Length: 195
Image: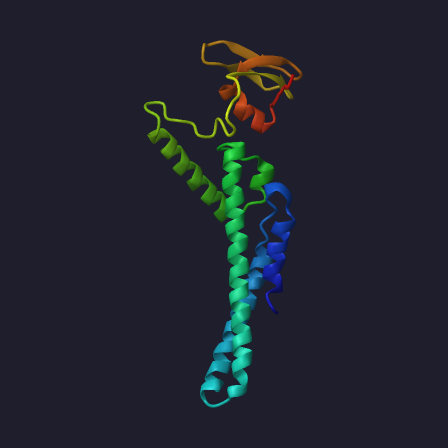
């Protein structure tokens, strides 16, 4: 009764390591909201009695109100933390999330992600002249413009700025512009070979 369902959601997020997005727990969220509704209704009934002179109910009313506020804080913290993790996934994976991650998101979170990526794309187009500026390219400042990469899985043809087409086959190594292959590194197609 004392905000256990809402705390369960917060604990689950806390246990999820390294920004991992656990599945959205609709059932537990609904149970916490139902608990809040029941607490509110009981408080409303007891407030009516307390107004008529039963002062012994005031402490119980305050306790229930504190439980309501704790549930509210826990649920808001759960939802806000999930949104922060989803926003970070946009920067990590790009505009298309893997199905395994989308499977863990609610319909509202998928819609929020879509609106966030459109908003970010609009901003990136408005900055940096005609072509825009891709803010997701260099998450860490580059030490060199070209890097050596190894292909981890077959990806097919890959075209770089000068028109050269490179075939990305598993276990092949290439010397490519960092900004062209950083997205593929984040997606797990390429890995940076450190000498």
